Amino acid sequence: MKKIAVLTSGGDAPGMNAAIRAIVRTGIDAGMDVYGVRQGYAGLIAGDFVYLSRRDVGGIMHTGGTMLGSARCDEFRTLEGRQKAIDALCKQGIEALVVIGGNGSQAGAYDLWQMGYPVVGVASTIDNDLEGSDVTIGVDTAINVALEAIDRLKVTAASHRRAFLVEVMGRKCGYVALVSGIAGGAEVVVISEREVAPEEVARELRAAYERGKNHALVVVAEGAQNNAQKLIQHFEADEGAIGFGLRATILGHVQRGANPTSADRLLATRLGHGAVRALARGERGVLIGLRGDHLASTPLGEIVGRQKPLDLSLFELARIMAQ
Ligand code: F6P
Picture (cartoon, protein in one colour):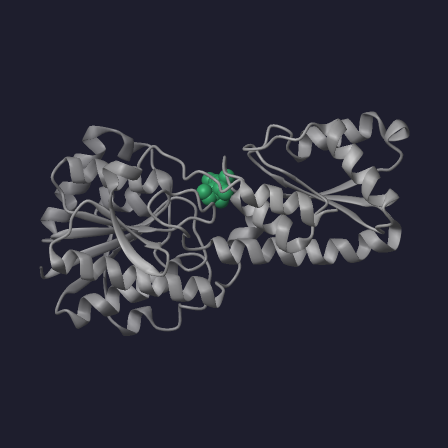
């Protein structure tokens, strides 16, 4: 294999740049030319390729975002769009594509593979909801951003004896909220996998004050039915009866923009390197992820359209630690 390409797709995740760097340098080391595709699948359809040398990917490992750009692309969802993408790859003489991204992006990679084009995926999403990898690129950084916010909010919460709520990203998955809640010492964690009614949240917060705590913190997953908006509504409507107000912070995209942690840089470097090695070995149509401390290849057909189940024993851990 002499020519490969790499693209980043979907929501950017801190560590994507480290993965691009690893793919380029491993590819060149194996005697390949490596091309970057700008703006994800949209750039692929447009044939927007850029040759990448070792130096082109220097000085990017510590930065969040993606040097190649990313996009969510409706045209790629059509058969015609995907055919255009394959034609562009073939016209450039590119023999295989590495797709760095989460669920939607890997579904796109699988579609290309089903049309006969060689692909390998790299597990990358701050949501950590992708089957085939215990941990995905970006989630460690996103959790650390949430923790920084939580730690700061606890300081002001303790000064005012106020309750605070932090809503974190994660799409439909509660992993980021649950781990941030445990590591941040939250009194209540609300996730879609274990909904907590607003009345129950209020009860838990009151109980925390009664136990002598001088702060009370709720971490909510954006995908929960009782998300920040719902909880705020409840607390605003019933503040008198509840006995205290709730200040809310919705972190949103702030979580995606940080410089990657060492864990994400190392993970991204290992997965990017592993993806090129897999292609060189002749593997096709697989996702490269981490299982335990080993790289694992999982057929894309086994992971697309599924959400990695959350380890709910962590929810019990959060509950006990909140007492
Ligand atoms: O999948 C990553 C993610 O950041 C989710 O946590 C979030 O729900 C979504 O992307 C936001 O998407 P967008 O950047 O398109 O608003």
